[in-house]
Length: 300
Image (cartoon, rainbow, N blue to C red; front, side, top):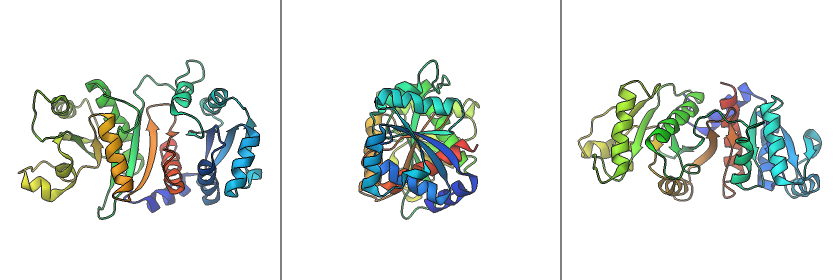
């Protein structure tokens, strides 16, 4: 089982290279990450966007563009559609967001003719390597679904399980997070947690162990779980942290990055191919890590 990002990069080199279609590629940080992925043998790329702006961005970060194919499309929406078409046609195996709003690229992903829709919920999975822990954490959903329903939460868990399995965790432990550890009818997050646990016990959510509701501390800390008298196999040992709303996920994500200084990556799951989607605030390293995870997902 992979437990650190250096292992992810090594595994991606062994599985790669895959081809990435970069939508609106005139982004300095994205080009830098793509260049690193190319040099490491993880991935190649087709750069779709305004060629003059791509050249300008490459000049700023010292990327030699001769080793990449460039498709000139100035309009951002059209560039996203072309990048998606490259994936749906099989010329590329994963999609990456460049200098474009998330809503624009997702509209292309969901296009009825050339899109990558499967009928499943699309969700974001953030992967964190936190100092002091011997495992990776998968936080979901911090970027896509605002206030998911119970059915959507089920699919969000299933998407996160796919990511964990691509990284060698065959039966990840899922902690469904809330503010308290007991079911309270006035707190929908706790009610949903109990139902998700029941779904898992009935075999409706497979290939994982679901438990909750958990507060964050007793999901990740064995000591905290013991203090609360919790002896469930997931208590203190959760791999996947299922948050109740996007606000909770966003705050946990940014606390991990800025307070804990955790290494991170992010990917959208639920489409026909992985979609590498990172924040503009994410480092070049985070973007490279995200590409590596996308390569492992595309290799399943």
